[in-house]
Length: 282
Picture 1 (spheres, helix red, strand yellow):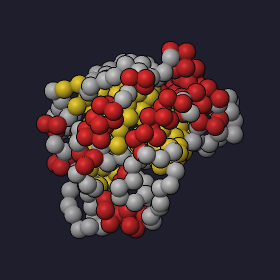
Picture 2: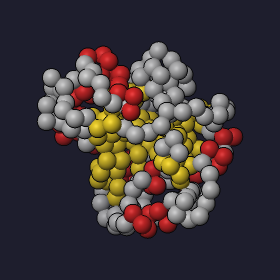
Picture 3: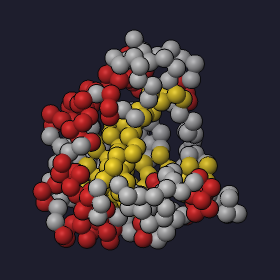
C-alpha cells in the first residue's frame, strides 16, 4: 500500500554554474559527542558549524534508514509527509521507482519509534543546550533523499525559512544515513557567514541566495559516513549540489530552537530576507 495523495515538491531542477560548489577544504571533525568541550563550542560560535564523525551507532542508523523506506512504502497508511519530485506528478509509482521519486519526508519522527533514539539523543541535546544556553526544542523534521540524479538544494540560510527573531540560535542537525561525499551531493558550507547577518533570498531554483552572492572561495565540503552528524547555525550559508553518482544519499535533517524563543510574522521575516520585498535584484 502507498500513501494517498503525496505532496509534490515544487523545486526547480535546472543547471547551475559548475564552480558554484568549488571547495579546497574539508570540514574539521571531532570523533564523538563526548569529545565536545569548550574549544569545540568556541569553534561553532566562530565558524558556524560542528561535525561529529561517529555521532550515532551503525544499528541506530540502519534502523532509521529502514524506517524511512517503510514510510515511503506505505507501511503507515495514515502518514502524509511524503513529498515527491515534480517529475513524479501524476504517476502511480511503487517499490524502487517510488523510493527514487521521493524528495523528502516531513514531520516523521513520531511515526516510527526507530527515529526517536536520534532525535532525542541525550548527548546531542546536551550539546545543543550548551550552544543555545537554553533547552532545545525540535520544531522541524525532514528526511532528505538524493538518489542518483537527485537535484541541488541551492545555497541558503535556514533562518530565511523560519519565523523567529534575528539573533535566535536556530541549529540544524544533519545525520547521514548513507555515505555522503563530494561525489553524491553532500553538504557544503561557508564558515563564519552566520556572523554576517541576513542575506537577500530569491525564488529561483528554490528559495535561495543569489548565485552571484556566494563567496565560493570560502566553500568547505562536509563528507560524512553513516552516523556522522553536522550541526550548523541557522544563519550559516549552506547548500548541496546534484548527485551525479549512482549512489543514494539519504539523511535526516532536524531543526531545534531555544525553548524561550519568540516568534515574528512572515512579513517581518521577509523584511530581513526577502530580496524582492527589499527591492533587491538577482
